[in-house]
Image (cartoon, rainbow, N blue to C red; front, side, top):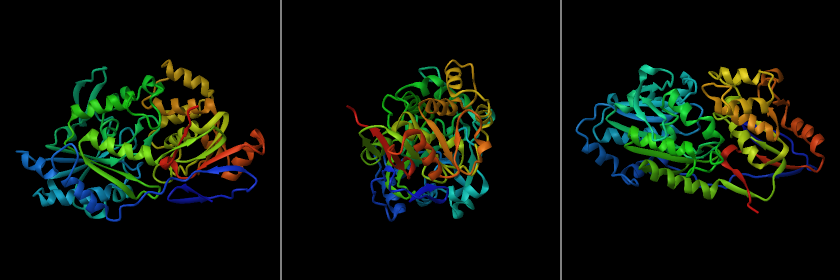
Amino acid sequence: MKFDYGKTSLEFSLDPNWNATIIHPIKQVVIENPKNVIKNWINNPIGTPPLKEIVDQRKKLNQICIVVSDATRPVPSNIILEALIAELNEYGIKDNQIGVLIATGLHRTTYDYELERIIGTDLLNRIKYINHNARDNDSLIYLGDTEDGVPIYINKYYYESDLKILTGYVEPHFFFGFSGGRKSIVPGISGALTIQANHSVENIDSPYSRFGIYENNPMAKNSTEIARLSGVDFVINVCINEEHRITQVAAGDLEEVHKKLVDYQLNYIFKEIDNPYDIVICGNGGYPLDLNLYQAVKSMGIGEIAVKEGGTIISVNECIDGIGVGHDKFKDLLFSKKKPEDIYRKALSKEITMIDIWEIQILTRIMMKAEVYVISTINRDGLGNIGLKYAESIEAAIRMSLSKHGPNARILILPNGPQIIPILKEK
């Protein structure tokens, strides 16, 4: 069978004697002409006037900022941009008034070859683009603190723009509940201090900081507050299927757009399971979400939901960028020879501090519940020494797992990343 992996897929043989359950995503209807649908939403939004009305009401429109997701996200931003900028051009807005801001958060900067996928060949030659840099204080502006004391540092180009538009996609997220909407602001175009405070060890430790939870999620609440304080004039978000094709569109108000698409996700993406499994095989759904081991932790979080205590998670992600460019401290901890329990405890007590502590915090939490095999392009020595296990293939990892759990062990296979999220049925 095929497992989403890199830009194509990874094939493996499923022994008929294995006690395996495969869950594929529910088939979603693809929008065949997404640009037309996006334009229709721009003219008939929810919670705001049509974009043309907003433009006409502005006395000054020298600088328009459109925020797009970075290279680690599979959203077809180029399609959204083509429809949106065509509309803006029709309103009399010239290309030189428009800037595309790439919401990198604390991720690495965008490589040249990735820009074409994000912005599109035609627009890349016409529109200015800016890579957000969360560590560059000169490119940030301080807006005060939130009610719970989070310092608000936002990209200056965005904040000083005369029209602010967010784009992106909504899908389940392993600690934010759902991506999209306010997440384009925090962490997307925020300063490092803001991101660190939002993604604090306390917030990550909250039982509400999990896949599919956003109403009581402390990070989502804080991010929404900061987005409102930063100013958001218009939002265009989409949902995509396992082939990264657009299935839903919504545009207009920040929160109303997000709620509409979250409600859709709740109906299509979550699948109840009766009991946890001995072995869960999961991934990030291929490129670009499986670019590196740092991002692969998200897929392990899917496995964490469905695996039993002491079970096995088999993480299948290409990791063509290795552990992850720019995540040196994460790498240092992977090679620290510490036990996951020690790293987790020291993260919570703040004996260990780093700019993106949350990823190692979540990884070690998962490793405390289950052993984790990694199927990737990373060799055995590249996985560090805190307990991540190497296997050369999915079949090899299954066989080693069966030697631990027995030949009748229950195996759950999730070949399409966060397009399907297992949820334990309440008893």
